[in-house]
Structure formats: structure tokens, C-alpha cells
Image (cartoon, rainbow, N blue to C red):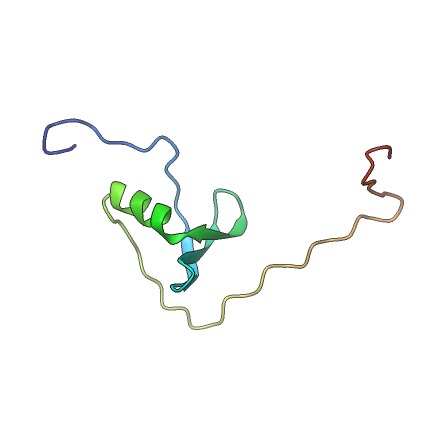
Length: 87
């Protein structure tokens, strides 16, 4: 509730784990369980969303390094992809 009694909500609320940031470039790196991906997110919109949801946060002290994302997999044998779309 806002001070005026109005409900303030976010229809696509999500949680994400911030795994790094680049302050000079204004970027935050997040592990997003909603999409299952590591993402590079602009800091300003992320900060605005965070404030809209009451600046809620949980901190984690990692004792091991965060692993790099897996390399893109190659198509299985017997399959192929075509840039022209003609298979």
C-alpha cells in the first residue's frame, strides 16, 4: 500500500541473483531463475524495479567462485541448421 492507500504492484515480479557489476558501464550481471540464464542488465532500470518492490534484498557471501556459463552446444549428429531456412 502507498501512503494514499493505493496498491502498487508489479505484474511480472521476479527474483534474480546479482553475480557481478560494472559500475563504469552501468551494468549488473544477474543469474535469473525466471529465464534460466545469466544476463547483463542496465543498472538504472534494475534499481528502479528494486525500489518499486520496497528495496528487498538477501545477501550471500560466496565461498566458491561463480562458475562460467556453459559453452553453446553443437547440434547433435544427423541434424543441422541452415542460415537460409531451406533446411
